[in-house]
Image (cartoon, rainbow, N blue to C red; front, side, top):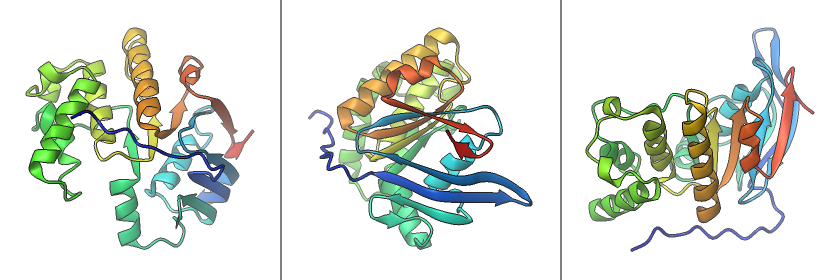
Length: 230
């Protein structure tokens, strides 16, 4: 059984729509009227200097932070008014995140790290394990399924983290500096993998990066400065 490709029809309706979003921490305005959108299947790079608000915007889109004003919609869900149950379902089924420092559980094998993300979805064990097997093949680490994170290179850990993020077949992948802790060769391999898998599964991606090189896998680049787009 091959990995099922996700079919999304580009109707012109954004998968993710951010409208006039503000976020304050104390007296500091971190997001200042931010508006942007991501179409189904689109890869968008988000660039800007440290402190420009990139990570805060990513956290608001993922539901980790709530905006103080404005609206964020993912599909039909308005994050500003969504209940805790709706937000949990959104993170479990629609949105996933890849981090700079992997966030793998050190006491679990590569296989177990990926499978863990599926255990709350109600997928039967046999189906879970088949999907993990397919994802390990997709990231070219089938031979490392019993390896623990400490025995893997940085690039290999990020491949496992990507497989874990895609295990529940999200519609939107948020990638927060996914190559930031890797050398150039490993970083380029991760970028190529992200391009390949998001294209294959028709997953939208918002890629936060400081690297101009990383934008090569995206169709569009958005620039942030002082909490504003543009």
